[in-house]
Length: 446
Ligand code: SAH
Ligand code: SF4
Ligand code: F3S
Image 1 (tube, rainbow, N blue to C red):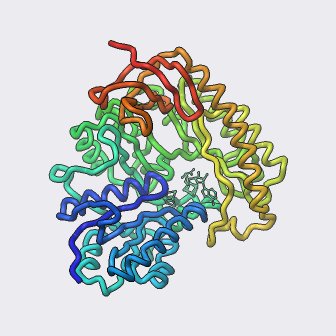
Image 2: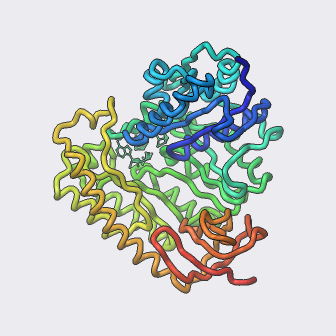
Image 3: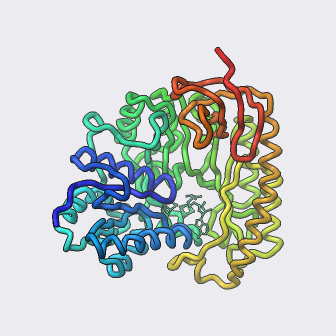
């Protein structure tokens, strides 16, 4: 059977996967492949996440769904990529006949050739899993001759570092994404330059721990330096994710406070409010040190939008430890909390720890925590009523006619009536009504 070169990419997980999938999409497009709907695709590329069991189950059932079609029509061919491939790839390759290629995140540079190989020769199977966590095959392209495909015309992510060396005891990321590797400054600047010329107004620098940028260089280039440099390239807005509390140093805060185009918004995952649990998690800060950082941050950047990640039901978490987490939320009052119940990841140290908690308890704590945070978010958002905020109108709102959406510098989502011609522009919005997930408002005419 001869397959036309058309494909569909299905992406799950965090922005690292989204960014990688967009790079693959960009190169395939450049090489003459057509991106089509899932039903028409001869090749389905699944870029999946492994961070929790549920994320993996989703991808597993996704792969199973192609069985009937494969039996009847011998299509589509499936390629499994992203973090989940590194963890489940071997199993998927032997379990599903239609999975012809598995490729780890650090083999991204070999993916386009490999995809061409399997579409030409679908009877073969290819295994490109990452055997050496230090080796990295970059997916290069010349931005001057290629349009970098992305979800949004006005906002773009730029990876500044791959992998992670922190080995928090619950986390699978260092095993699936390999060792920390900073991208060369010039590669980052070239990509940003291209994006700015292509109409991008907001750049988000991306990495599992952006604060460690440059630690693997033989020089004193660091994240504060990079942030400063990117700021001087004059994007209207700059953001960055994720920051690790122990590496989020005052020099970074100073650059943020200094530069108007670095948004006052920060995701600083606390993970737990209990010193005992933080230690078991191998997070190298105490709650007191975390509080101190937030204090300095709010002193220097009073309008900072602050979000966090937190896990409930880590092994050994007592009622008292959990209360410490609730207490941290009440004291700090985050704008938003990404919360999750602890999920064992095979091969990580926490999966072998004693005193594992029943799943029901992890989930009931999650519910309690979410309720408390909902009240805090409602209280914070209520304060926006009748205030004026500046928003980058970046897209149509997902629901409702003639509604646009955008974000404040502090990263609050705002929905407002507006025409297409406002897209890509900065508009002043008067907030009329606040919900937990978004604010509603009206454009103030210029
Ligand atoms: N590098 C980032 C986050 C990476 S993973 C950091 O250091 O914070 C994204 C989030 O998933 C984490 O912040 C954590 O809250 C959550 N997470 C990671 N492993 C998990 C696990 N085994 N169970 C539940 N949540 C987990
Ligand atoms: Fe995972 Fe910790 Fe690395 Fe974040 S810093 S990716 S939580 S190991
Ligand atoms: Fe998931 Fe990989 Fe991101 S495991 S959270 S997609 S780095």
